Image 1 (cartoon, rainbow, N blue to C red):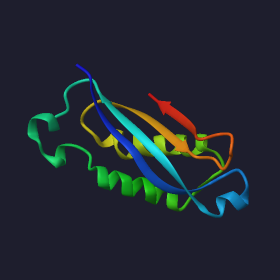
Image 2 (image 1 turned 120 degrees about the vertical axis):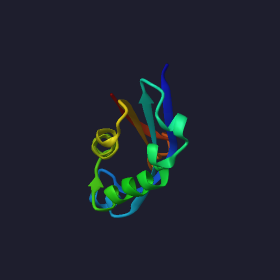
Image 3 (image 1 turned 180 degrees about the vertical axis):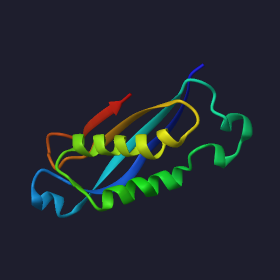
Image 4 (image 1 turned 90 degrees about the vertical axis):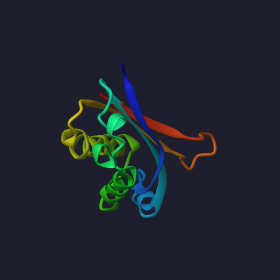
Length: 121
């Protein structure tokens, strides 16, 4: 059996853009994170918040991670968020889990609605 926990449309305000001018203003990006479980997570039986990850805490930690950094490209942002989740969440959980992460940006181009970068185990 395979289970997933999906966190969709996490809104983060980041300093993002190729030019220094573009990075001087915060931009909103959307992040989607999927945690995959090879076995049924303990929380399914216990129904206890302490047996899972708190979405609010994770979102706050992701925003705090971004607050002190700037990124030229969504690929760098996505990779660093992925590494942060691996260290902060996956390494601390008793269950074996995988992570898939997607960063979505609406670039300031009239000919392109959105760009995204995905990374997964």
